[in-house]
Image (cartoon, rainbow over all chains, first blue to last red):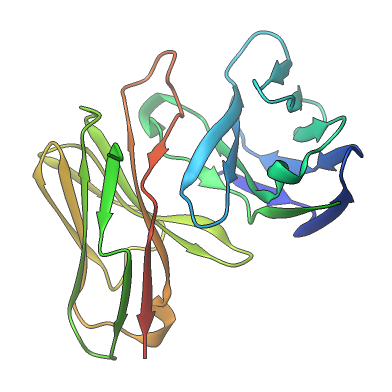
Length: 115
Length: 115
């Protein structure tokens, strides 16, 4: 079985400040890791993912996440946030194979960017 | 038009009533999912279907049933709604594995309130 823990339920941050959202997972096999973002009153959309290769992955809007196998973590960071980054962020894991796209999600971290 | 469409978007009902949430997609994906979102719990998988003849229970299927009427349509039913089924429900789709592994495409959600 796999599980995902997002250590912070809410993160208030000022505009142009850095932000880090923490995610730890547990799994007995190799995993694929994801961050999804949910803007107010919308569905979730993929922000970035780690499947294999480089442990540092980036999104098109300045977020990055680093896969750390020894610490079973996949923390999300952005060096300078914008008001438009206000959203809820979900970390998710799957081990692929027969599980296909059956993702297990963390509880979410709500980011509120203040001017 | 949205690629994944859910109806209704909002529904208020009473305990004991039968409710159906419908999902249709134009992405041509084989795989479809129903998740529910509760504050602090993230998204939890109710049912999933990898093709028209394949239906599988997720982690919280009790009290729910589904029907895959066609590749593009996947409905979720609550035979006798109860208040703790009050939640935001999401339909999602995905393609087969490979480069798109793990990428779910979500509808905008159906908010259900059971009084």
